Length: 229
Image 1 (cartoon, rainbow, N blue to C red):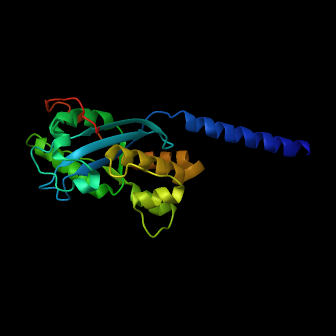
Image 2 (tube, one colour; image 1 turned 45 degrees about the horizontal axis):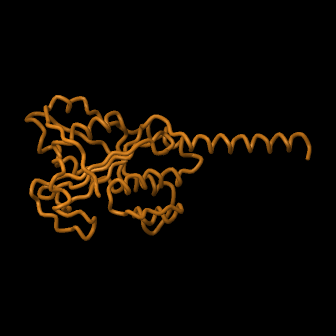
Image 3 (cartoon, rainbow, N blue to C red; image 1 turned 45 degrees about the vertical axis):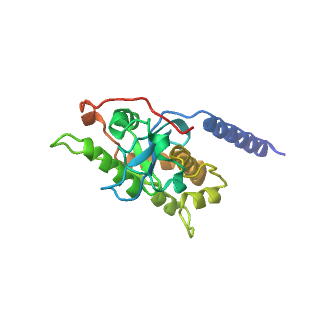
């Protein structure tokens, strides 16, 4: 082996070592992947019963997690067969207004993401509008991770489970909000591969971040989160 071949091999090993080290230590959170579980699909009548945020750095490495069950103000949960949440589970959970301040603070300044974002965004917006003071607007700018996946790979289905299968990941707690939110970000990390940081920075350059500043003076009550047993 000549000098240049040895040099190339050494540099390759160094690059791989640096790449592995980067994946071991996540940086500052910039992406907030959000997932909800709800009593149904109608934003006017249905309510959020579980809300989760998994925050990732610019390379889509997991930084931290936050999640809570939510009391739907007496709304009957008729789709427990999907997510496993019953009215008994949420009986002592906080209501949406009681967790909104903490939720908004956690995603403040973040690029919001969700898998099938139109659904989660409409449900969160509907909940927020119920507590918005008269004359104020609330805005949640979401990036849909389905759209991101479609730019990277051609598949028959872009369900989260199908994308996880494609990248070799498995989510044993499907329809648990924090598990789905975390799996979504990890799927993007695998899907983007070595381009994850580059793509992450491109998204940051183009996307609109959430600004919680105008919601901090709403004077909402705060209660501790309650998670699944």
